[in-house]
Length: 109
Image (tube, rainbow, N blue to C red; front, side, top):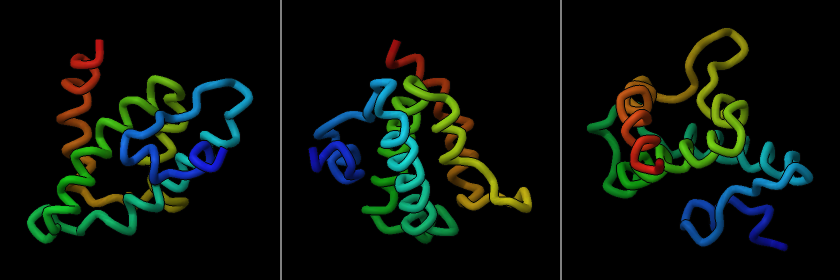
């Protein structure tokens, strides 16, 4: 039960995103938590990040793909701009998402 409501096991690939319709609120909570983790841990520039930050960025793209397979709306929430329309995630990361997601999706099919 505890892993069901925690992001860490998802980040470690110990469990997947909850996909049952009755878990929609849990999925929303986890997507918001994932977004906040990205905001806090991704460096402003790709060159400025540690090896751990680069690994997290790489892993997070695959997590976005698996989240989008369950709920495109939740995946969009993770990368959405703020209320003023300004991006909250670093530009280099958003560019990598646009570049890498089609390949990641194709690899899952």
